[in-house]
Length: 207
Image 1 (tube, rainbow, N blue to C red):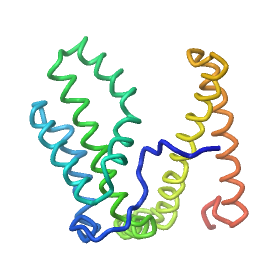
Image 2 (cartoon, helix red, strand yellow):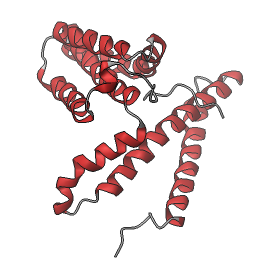
Image 3 (cartoon, helix red, strand yellow):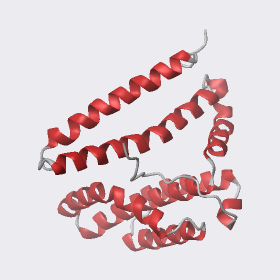
Image 4 (cartoon, rainbow, N blue to C red):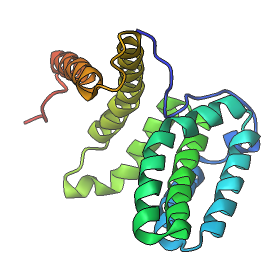
């Protein structure tokens, strides 16, 4: 199966100032963008922040194509959200909501294209260590993130393959022809992942 159309772009080696930025600061940037999505109430401010984040992404050297691909994959969902919000709350509010989501998407992309996966997981472990006293397992949490990062491209690729197959049979407008095969493929993938983890003794917490 092809694996294209990945929502979260992979690491792109480079020596940009964004690559050299400490990981904690990049985590803080992503968190700040998420928080801003609740605080910003003017769509023009959201548009300005999005422009800054896009400029930051391009500064990494990852290229316009990767940026466009990340944004394009969420376009159908955002179009639906924007249409509903426009109908219920008006154009400015709809624009603000859509732009704020895009800010978060691009911020996450900036993090992943400038940080190797292992460094990202090590950072997650380090950030979650203070919660260990509450019973959290930093290593298990990092493993969960790793599985998520691996699963998203698989599911996106599965959906793309099923969509192409349905289009070839003239069934691209049939929800069952799209959803059911992806659901079956995803469940099978999840079971395989679970079996692999269990075989390594990672399926259950240690007694």
